[in-house]
Length: 481
Image (cartoon, rainbow, N blue to C red; front, side, top):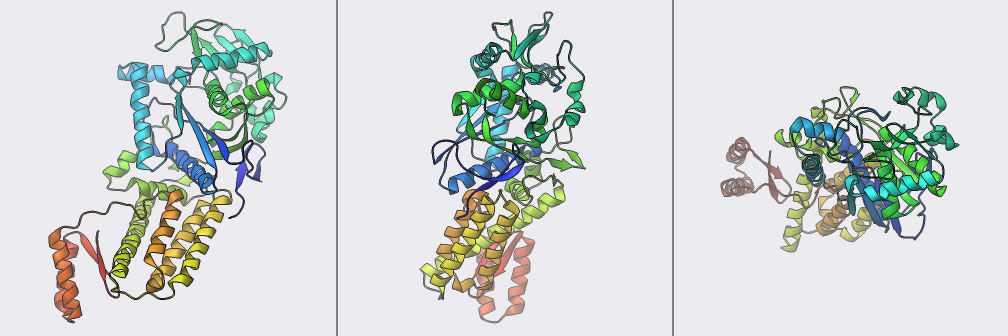
């Protein structure tokens, strides 16, 4: 098994993965959703890859402590610390409390994770339940001289972080083009960001708290630092997020951590590319997003989207279309049909109705495929290559069906699927009606009697009923079309 290599956005290099502290315990922090609206496929692309990364680490015998926040307070409609609070705005639109909004959309988020076989984090931490921790971070920054007060809040002075303008290899010109150049009133620097915002004097917010500086709420950029400190310590292994966090959110996290500890919060910063629809980033603000439920309504298995995601390298953008997802759905069904065939072979082997040859030799072939699969994933999460290796393996098995032990094949498929999580072996097959089974058996007998014309008529009858017969040398399987 090769050494894990991963692209570190902080160093702009592919690096060997070496844990910060204990040899086998990994701290992993991933930026979670702002729970003011439905989770869409653009978000889920990032969460799928984070899930794969975590499962690759586990395959390499690491233990992973995974922490994710949910933002239910403090994220404004503009990165320049202006505009409405997204949660408060949505609560008004739906005539609900902010807490009801957060609860509803958090449940939607978790439902989506389940549909895509994304494992929940060990800790899912809402920002509103970590106000004390965020206040403590701001206090530490204040003590060290990194804050200043304006009429609308407490701000972080980015000019006091020497390398702020080069974090993630951004340059001064990039930052000047950022919307933050439109200085909020009283900001010292365009890149300064709010640590604590005061509640409007003429309006009572649903979410507001007392603090040493006045009644208000924490800025968005502080919550991840506070939660990471609490659950993973001041310096941990991996911090993940979408590439949209590179220009603002993650530099602001690093600035706060470096001001307090002298370290950039995490050793490895891993970012995932956008999902595009009609050449634009799929986002809530654009309104043109697609959800998992939309796929289900189109009779598409949600795991087809997971397969679609894995077919593109994680640092590249992916172009979404229903046609592409339907193609992935067909490919997924082919994988399921393959595993059903191997399951049938397993039973025929147990009943000693088929003779297998060279199975011990081909057990080694299966292991070589598995090792190549893991090495592809260890090479900067090369999921397209890993999927290619899976298809190569199934093709070779199909060509030499009676030379592979079906038990070994199913075991190998399960090993692949412990990372891919496509339910290749454990998928639930549609229950075949007894009438279809009876027709299929009758056809099989007719074929053995060489009454091919009658057998073909029965096949047509089965096909018209929405099922298909998959013929092999000594057996057949039935699947839904």
